[in-house]
Amino acid sequence: MPIFDNHIHLRAEFRGVEAAKDFERAGGTAILLTHSPYDEIPILRAEDYDRAYAKTLAMADAVRKATRLQVLVALGPYPVDFLGLQGALGRSAAIEIMRSGIDGAARHIATQEAVAFGEVGRPHFPVSEEILAACNALLEYTMVRAKELGCAVVLHTEDPTPATFAEFARMASKTGLPPDRLVKHHSTPFTRTEDTHGLVPSILAKEDLVVEALKGEPRFLLETDYIDDPRRPGAVLGPATVPKKTKAWIAKGLLTEDQATIVHREMPERTYHVQIR
Image (cartoon, rainbow, N blue to C red; front, side, top):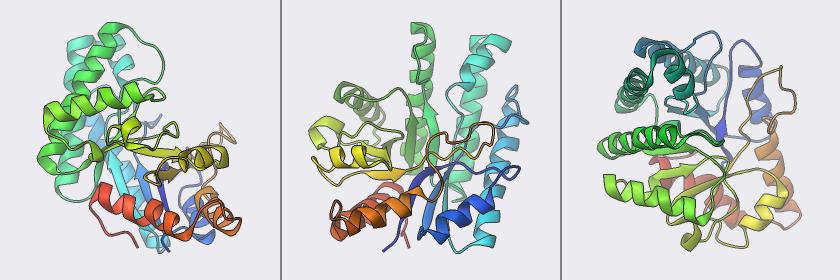
């Protein structure tokens, strides 16, 4: 049975490949390596996204060479980048640079170096109405590009409620993107279709969240959101968590093998349109 971590960050200057090996040794088989900001590559111009994406893609190649893992990649401008760009350059310039970052990610998706935009969306903390509107417009633009490319979008936003899921489903409808191509990273454990409005929740691999999620449908993904940063030890979950927890939950009867197959193979295959092994 494949075991898939839907959201993990790896950095060559920290544990990087060694963290991926931890995942593999624990029984993991596939990851979605998700782009995130790099301190050493501050985003001040559109070209900076090209340099940052190249670093993430190089990390993916390094893991493939050092392990047998299947490495999928998500690329996109981190939503909080908008705040720094607006403060430094103004709102119009910030929007243009973020749009360029979306277009840059699209080029890598078009060449199949990446399978999704991510993580993109809006800040997970309160911001002004003007910033929220700008971020929502950028998210809609990302959905337009995703519709053109036939790919998924991994969302970074505040913790979702059914109303939040409905809002994103409406955005997707406007752009023609099917809602099941939207993945809510770091999701609350809503899994009933009437609550998610067709979006795909990606849930931290914590037992209390999985117990709650299974009260609905096994229509979700599991993630660690491992950040690979020694300055924040213990932040989110370790890289071996998804395989270790999945096997433990099957052993104790909390998760059936059929449910695990849905979570680790059927859902990622349906969402990212790739074969998971």
